[in-house]
Image: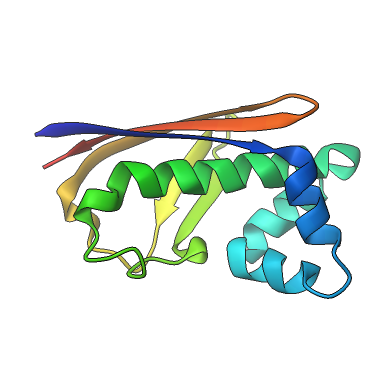
Length: 126
């Protein structure tokens, strides 16, 4: 058993600019986020970019935590990692298109303020 962790921090303004870009914004959003994540973030109205950025940071943190279990960095896509909240509001990680039998447990914490979003993932790997 091995404990693996990943952390990421992102400027919210950077994600906002990527999403609002007239030429590439929709492509960026649809490449990185699942429809359920988009629906969730859009429901947050004025704070939606904080939530987009938090999910971006969470996906990066997940990738960092599980990267040694991947064949290569292209064996998982942005949309293979989905971050949704449970009934109590705690963010949960769903990993698709990957043999996750080697992941015994994985936990996520995300936070954001006016300028930054941060995420930390801790996983127990077999």
